[in-house]
Image (cartoon, rainbow, N blue to C red):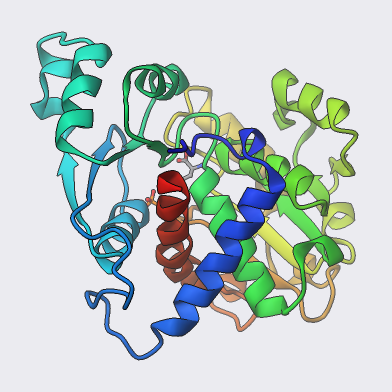
Length: 306
Ligand code: CP
Ligand code: NVA
């Protein structure tokens, strides 16, 4: 049994194996519709319990289809209906019950510590479906999308992030270490990655460059990633932040600094960080990106049961 909490804790070879498995599975079910089960029915009889402490559209739907296509089922819990949040039941006791009734637990949380506490008390795998500091299932799936579209290993591509230093970027940074790709980050000076992440970058001697000029970050990119300037956990001055990010908006002019066939990715939901013309262009692959979550998460679930 394995947990899936942060990319930095998972060996590269396992992450690559997850992507290889996802590629095989995706190909094998080209003619099947959404609710049809993979032929080998690998998770027959297994129950994935999911809980969302924050809003979600894509993660909720994609994990639902992921477990269904593997032959299992899912139950989504609302935190406000549990004793855990209402009546003060402990994570320890909640975890015992989740482990007795379910076979895996997917949590989107407003507090990273909860993931670790659940991990400590669960006897089934816990999967991070987004926390304030990371979004690993999103980024692993995005690497799949990049390699699928570019038909190359990501290590041979120039990857750029233009936007806030948030949970999604943290996972992208961890991925750049695990998959050895060059990463350029474009963000205003006061919104650089936090100390913990900077230490991780330094410690892993990773090739990450941070620019305060979005043009320099976009220069020569094969892929440009972005995300909302204001995340769900943001507590700072939102108006000030939006003003500071104005010149980091991804428009056609900025995309002009990247390679001609550069693709644009965004985990969604979007805000004002991307111009409609870029978002709706052929270079934007956001819908393929969202759909691939199902395929990669299936292989993440299988990894958890290895
Ligand atoms: N990208 C993503 O995780 O979307 P949701 O917040 O809708 O799940
Ligand atoms: N950074 C965003 C990602 C949403 C999928 C947030 O945390 O709100």
